[in-house]
Image 1 (cartoon, rainbow, N blue to C red):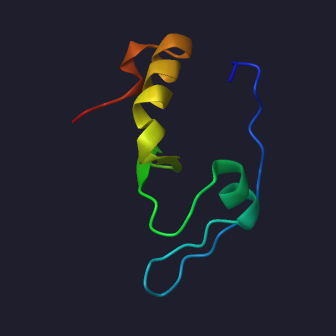
Image 2: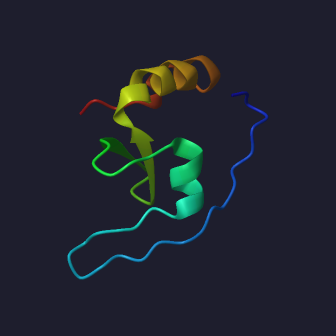
Length: 76
């Protein structure tokens, strides 16, 4: 992954009455997400959420620190 990588809209999700969402198939295929995989939800500016498979969380954090800065994660 490089800083040149672009964001890509993969589809939309709706929130059910039980506060559940369905991950679009294109995203499940790209991330190899399967039923009952653990995901970590990260928020930014109280307006955006990112879901990351928990088994690559630290890899993502190290990448973000290297390319964005050490203060990328707020542990509070």
